[in-house]
Length: 553
Image (tube, rainbow, N blue to C red; front, side, top):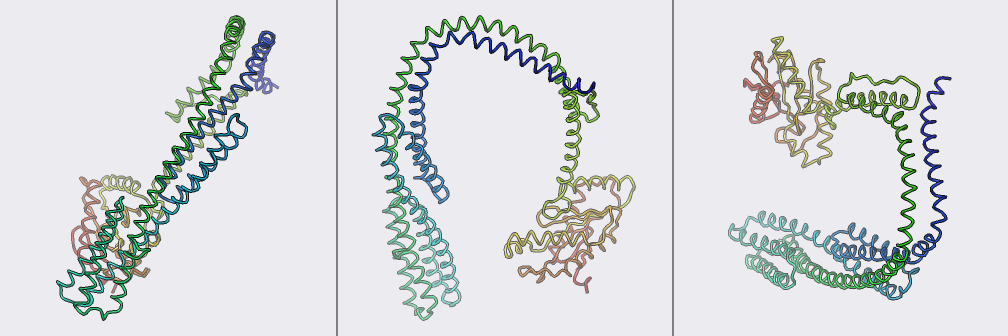
């Protein structure tokens, strides 16, 4: 029974306070009602007629400004997504504008303007669509031109002709391609047409040189040159597309300017309508100004009485509720700074329940924080420790090794020619390769005290506490054999047909003055030696080179 009473005590206090406030408000409203009848009639007239028209005029003007902005966005759109979004927004705005104009007075002129705007938007959209499509076609032809340039140069190299002749032909091919690409950066028709003639001349020079040196027997070469000629100079060639693109841009700008002026004219008409409506509202408002002044005097007197009663009510709420909440808040802040602060959860009212909920969620947040910390120390791709975790672990193991005076070994492993692998097989296959390597490393027998971490990119680190030089070399050889047995294809490797690794080892027997950077730099130098002397092997920081191929055999 006591729990029920305690639980409902705060509710009773708040409800009672609310009843008092509502009662006072009703009294004030009833007393003011008789005085506000005349004022209400005047305000209703303003609200239902003048203000409604003013609001509508304001909204129409706002939509016209938005249509103006969107039309400029449509004119300058450089891709289909931007064009489509601008067009859809324009259609939404013009539809809403049409709906507003249907119910607006004296909107015949604006309706006529709106129809013209819609037609102009449709025409502008067609021009912008054509411009964007032409841009994509031009980009595709640019890519084709690079391919044809490389093919022509390679074909001439394979003919084994005189070097001067080869340089002459190659230079003309490159200049033709360069001139064509230069035309794409120009924004005037005359320079583009001049480049058209220059490219035509360069290609004719190439044809004349080939004919003069009896090189026309190579049908593939002749066909490739013809493709280059067609790509640049045909009616649907790169340069003619550029000319068309400039013409379309000019038309789009002209259409956009006309649309801009059309919308601006409609906006001025709307602003004038808004001005007339606003003038009517001001006139009606002045008529009520005197009546409002009288009402204010009476309302202030009543408000003073209500204010005094409200202050008394707030004091009671503050004393019974707010003070306790402030105290609870202070405890929560202290708890955030120090986890050993106790929050009082005694009692059975609402604030006590709130305190218990806060304690519960604080404990849950702390648990999630610990879980998040664990996630922050793990590499998201391979599932092994990340660089941050490695630094913490290596510092920890260095301190233990110094205290116990035992050796510490460090292996840095790098995948051979991994950039070539990424470029040839793709980054997705590269990520899968890293995951596979990490899985192989985890499958190699390790102690609980050993640790595997991703050092960066294609490099991994194996930390071996209490392990001497011989033990580290044995572990490195195990890793290399395990990866070689995997036989993961790598056609772009210069040392093997499959994935291989190079390993740098550093071992410290006397580590009193060794730092984290010393350990990593020593192993990194050994890794450099392993790469420099042939890869697919390991090398110790005190370099005694060991080839894995000989070990494996």
